[in-house]
Length: 115
Image (cartoon, rainbow, N blue to C red; front, top):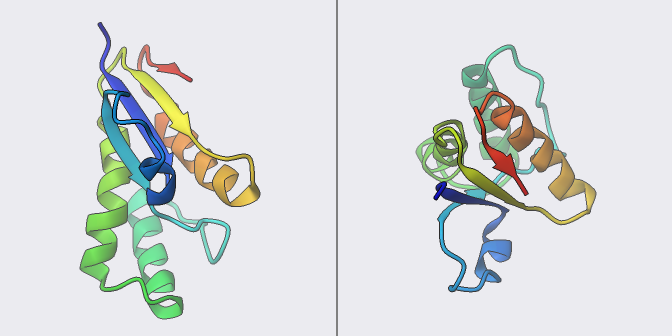
């Protein structure tokens, strides 16, 4: 059986998931519809977003951004081939913009099934 991964747009959506649903849970904690998003590399993107969010919002330190946000994106990039991936995003603009980045990160995953 393929490994199952559930990707959630935020902790609130994750909290609504039934404990009966098994699999690895990944939480997107970004606000990509606000602030700069254009960068040449993911490393530059993370640096830019860290600077913006720590200056504009009380999100904590650079280290906390890396721990709570960047590591979740890295987990997406490390999903093994042939996994089943379930995307848990609402249909509003906030969620859709975050979903676009998740889909971009998943585009090179081999043999994965998205739901």
